[in-house]
Amino acid sequence: MTRLLEARGIEKTFHNGDEDTQVLKGIDLDLEPGEMVALLGASGSGKSTLLSIVGLLLRPSAGTLTISGQAIDGLSEKERSHFRNTRLGFVFQFHHLLPDFTALENVAFPAAAPAGGLSRQMRERASELLGRVGLSDRADFGANRLSGGQKQRVAIARALMNAPDLVIADEPTGNLDRESADRVLDLMREVNKADGATFLICTHDESVAERCTRRITLLDGRVS
Image (cartoon, rainbow, N blue to C red; front, side, top):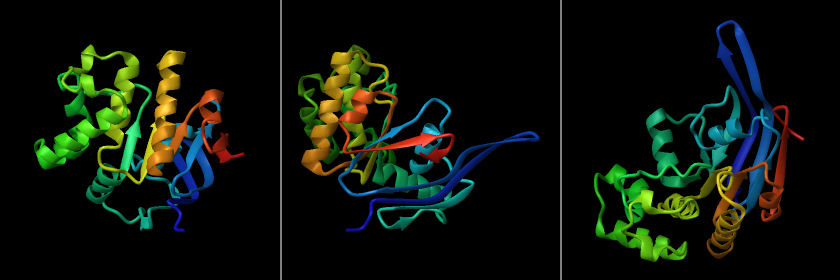
């Protein structure tokens, strides 16, 4: 079986005037299809930087990255943007829903925005996903009318809109109370099992890591 993700020798150095700060120091990382992997590490260990590189939001200073058999390194910015939108899903600590949109419109956004509008098929797909996250009765609610836990469940549905190869989650429960966090984790695990969706979840929460199938720990820019 082809690996979903292969990262080799990933380095990242940030330049600020005459000062260079090396955040990642030669990361090797593999993800298999259907895994749910926790990325652990203290603040400053490089977790968010690594997620940004895997999510094609940053380019590494060195190293190679392959996702779903596609070598990422030679892609143009336009090609990277297209790959990111069609093949990757994102869940953040803060839901980043569009406040003037309904729950359904927020879920459909990754497909509707590039197409310039919301088609019947997109609406049906978004409605199906809202049902899966238990929010069919909130489809026409504006984002500001939803609770924190509901917003994060909408964010998970949005991440799945384009049936991505990989869902990248950055502290997805970090802004939730324990009950809401448990519901979000249960939902991600359910999607992982039912769909075979692959998750890479950045967290400092041990209870999140316990729900995952594997854990990777970063220490001072390296896999420890």
